[in-house]
Image (cartoon, rainbow, N blue to C red; front, side, top):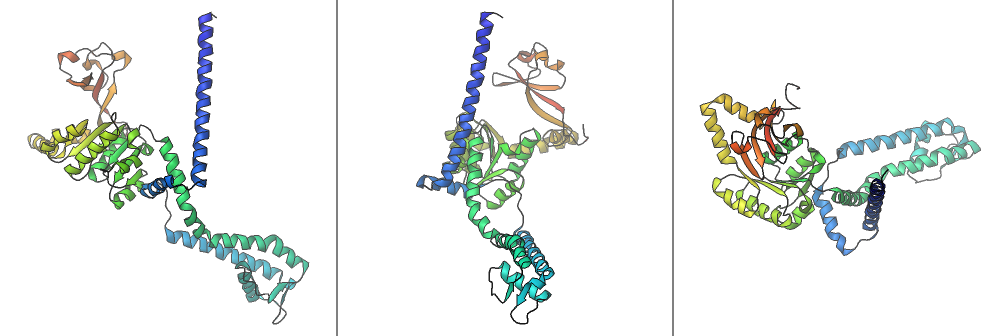
Length: 388
């Protein structure tokens, strides 16, 4: 082995060791920060507590009535079990009223014992009965009390648990997608993102309507409740570290304010905004939007195409619909495609992206594909309705 190779190997080992050490230190710091947030209730944590109440993380929610019935069933089961144990060993108990213990007396003793009332009118007198109380009935009493106060304990610990989850989510969220507005446009945008392979835990929804936030959480998404035109709301969604932002509110003026605020918080993110009127498109672009989609003009063009050819309109709608047989995607040029024509690619190329310019596949500049190019193609969907 040459000296240069040995030096390179040592450098690689040192670099890997440094990366491992940094990762371990970051993990320890994350755990320590969580512990500090639990032990120290400083004034600076007030904003974190407020964020915990406005950030909804996806959870599997059990209906309250079902929780109460489940705990009541467990408590009754423990009561029946204790009654059975006392009744089996009834000879070891003494009833001050008549001296004997029947099934009703066993149920009565179990009730007052598990509830820690303890009137003392029925008492264990034999060694076996007392041993049963020590080994069986006392643990059942503790378990019975835990079930009864479980709801109270859950309410007391819910806020702390929520703050810990929010803190961990914030520490791990980077290069994600923020979707402002979970109406018709927002929901379809999320469906398309998921169809393109983006994980649900990489999508954050922001909406001012509580019903929309709850719907997003039920769909397995992290949701933030608040006005998206306010800086603090977008910070709760970790927008400064996001990679893409979709702005899809109901009003054009709201879209403009949200786009302007988002661009001030994040200079590098790709912002795609939707507006109703064409006259607002230049305003959105001046506000910082990378791409602006006009829903009115897009619908009008689709109507015109439908009049000219219903089949062409169906094909266009299929390209834009999640789960259809064909899909429109952008991808980098493969190594074996460099230097070839767009017509020579395995899938159908409709445009070439070169240095932020979109070239039609018939453009002479796009006649030969370059290594840094990206191509927009039509290909068969992996999740198509035909199972292909």
